[in-house]
Image 1 (cartoon, rainbow, N blue to C red):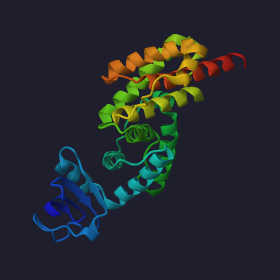
Image 2 (image 1 turned 120 degrees about the vertical axis):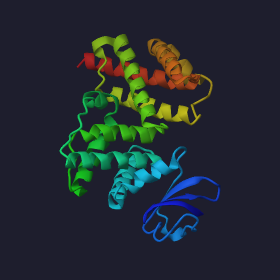
Image 3 (image 1 turned 120 degrees about the horizontal axis):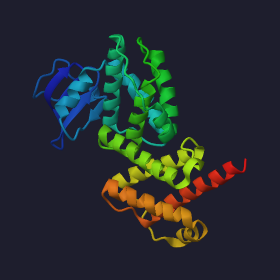
Length: 282
């Protein structure tokens, strides 16, 4: 690999063996280097392959203190693993930049307001719980502790990492789509539907993993089969509502939802119905 640009001693832009522009980080990777110099492989700690604007990504990384980047990487990778996923490299950059900017804002006495905490708690309870723990661990190491509201932003970055959304904007769109599905459930079931219930949390988690499968082209794609037939016969209302959810997802995502995915949507709707019936009898 050849260096294209040196940002500092620890961050360079290079061209790899496949002709791609890549961002390399590592202690001393840019030390006494200039454009055209070969990269010393033993100095590379991380390699990022941005689809767009690699120089901008390199500059963002160069602005973050190396020890802060390492801290965020360690805690974020653990948090994503706790949610059953792996850390996409570029989501690390987005979160590390967010935390770096948040620390600098607090240092200047500026506090960001995150008014969506109640909504995030309903839509992404698993991610929020992990984010709150992660924030506590971060604050143990930061000289300027971040306020509790930052857990909301961390939640959305975790959701971004787990669903594999290409951008944070797409992440917020997917969160908004979960909110629309919940609105459909509330419209169908009225006050009996509790968006804070454990069954609603499981339903949100199912949607989250559906988004990941849909984005990677790996939807469940079999025939209806005996499970589907049993759901249609045993829970016709749940199946009908799942078809309405399917129509909403197809409209918003712009591609079809497979029949097998509808079957699993139906199972989760049926579980919601069971939970609501149980709630009425207790």
